[in-house]
Length: 447
Image (tube, rainbow, N blue to C red; front, top):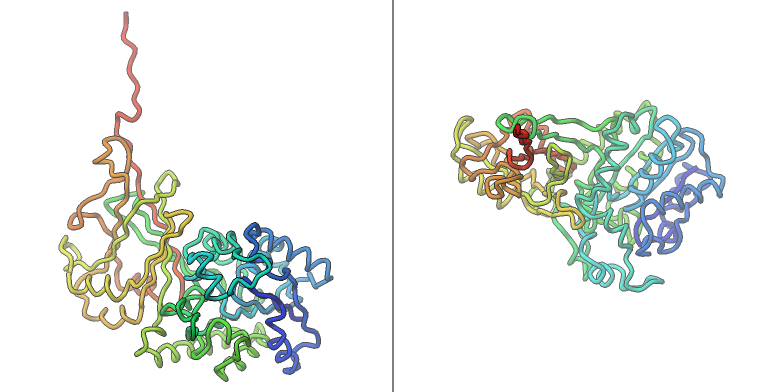
């Protein structure tokens, strides 16, 4: 059995064409939809928790399979977050009913449009045709915003938790996303490295974590990269945008899309590793073919969450990436650093609800173009407020740019840190300092 789940601001009706095509392939005898309700995601009061609970209720009411690996699921866009939240909330990795999971343009790590506001999204993409005009689903869009704590916490559950959710013997997950933007009035929302709605790097589930510890020993910060548990298949597909890849708006536009969708719905435990390798090769080839077009460059969504050693969010900070002259130098290599700032770090977004979370879009294609000419190490430094030297009481120890303590990334760590078409979650910690006068004891004098 196959379940099709739509995304934000959509309905099951949009997927009749996709369902018919799948039935015509004679893969399934019965294609069913889970109804989340028409425009339910446009209600400003609805949360992801509401969607997950409503989905579980609908699933059980319809008598859908609950045995381990008993059903295949296709999701589009926000449906990717809903299904991941649902399965990690109501099931365990070894009791999860999903066998194959095909994600079409999923917003696994957010969308660059989510923070644009009601007027922009409503007018450009929806025309305010919902049953609740001028409502766009505030809570859902908060979760969809780049660098949202929601997507971060979800990744901790299924990608970086104690259990493996994806791979042979688990959920056989295939992620497909386009690299072409919209045309017409909707093109105003296009962003390089996206399908018009979701950045390619935010769709891929093969994410990574990097733990940067400036708190334990500020003079000798450390970096510890960690890969996600399990494995998922991923590919970018040229010519497809966020809608056409899901058989909407006259799509698909690329014949390869049909082939990859069918493979994602027929792959087996035995063939999954080969499936992943084939998609990786196709994706790399497609990225190379589009190297001359900045829109289709390979970007990395680098999400930073800054906390101090007391596990408190640090809201006011400045993150710096720069090249030094050589390992022991305090002097910056100006030429490469300028290129890094102007061409490589293309977008920085601060999460509206908590500025401790930031998203940096890194153009890995541009980075690769000039990396061989680097004369010194790539360094990461942080400046945060309050500055203890200014407050004279509490805060963080910060310095001028030429004296700031920084972490040097060697060649191996850099290779692990920067990869196109994926997301890296950077857990950054710094030390909060309290000077002696903040709290002290006075010995009671003898009489």
